[in-house]
Amino acid sequence: MSHIKGFANASRLTSKRPFRVSIEGNIGSGKSTCIKFFDKFDNVEKHSEPLHEWRDVSGHNLLGLVYSDTNKWTFPFQHYVHLSRLKIQTSPPSNPNVTVKMFERSVQNSRYCFVENAHRQNYLQDPEYQTLIAWYNFIEKCMDINLDLIVYLKTSPEIVWERMIKRGRAEESEVPLEYLKEVHESYERWLSSPDVGCEVLTIDANKPIDKVTEDLDRYTYKILGGNH
Ligand code: DGT
Image (cartoon, rainbow, N blue to C red; front, side):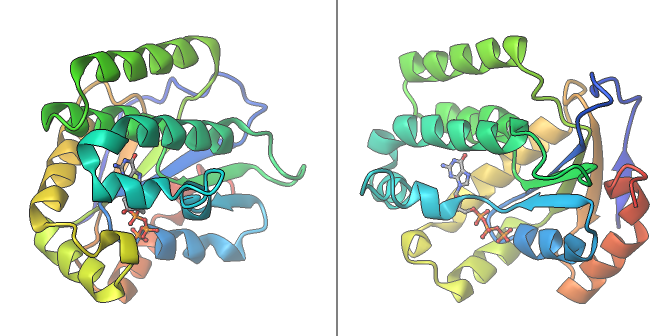
């Protein structure tokens, strides 16, 4: 069942910038398909996860490295993810017609989902974790990184694990179900917290894609913040 967990949105500091929507969910939850659904709206600027950048940081495939030796490479990988998300989230709109900016995952996701999980699982040592937090806190203080809405494509780890294996992305070939359970738990903790900072629209993404699309259609007014 889909539902909206909401409260007053105090995060949109300036009416000048576009409405910011982050599409969130576990690996294989269907975030890219969800973003494609909004292709038909000219006023929506869309950003998929910049996997191509993570795969070629001056010749280094950071995504591949993090899965090949998670303890060693999580620290630089999260740094890079953080930087690329920050660029997407805060860059000015590409043209004056843009009133909504939609992106796959957010700076907040990096901080409160993946970094928290990495610390809990000891993929990040405490000094590394504290360094990443210090960066996040500084940026949060100095820049408007606020979100206006999170669309949470909620799934069960078993279902997304099957999808992930089926799509056969090279870097993910050895990712165990256990990891998807960890990421799921981390999402649940973050998005059920009273401090999440914006409304969360939860969509049941275990369902087949046509059913998810029906929900996206039904909630378009909400997802675009009335800008359609
Ligand atoms: P979708 O459409 O929901 O299947 O999403 P995709 O396939 O476009 O993206 P997804 O969720 O599979 O993410 C791409 C890969 O990047 C995946 O292996 C998880 C990884 N990833 C993304 N952000 C982070 C992060 O902050 N930390 C870590 N460790 N991995 C991340």
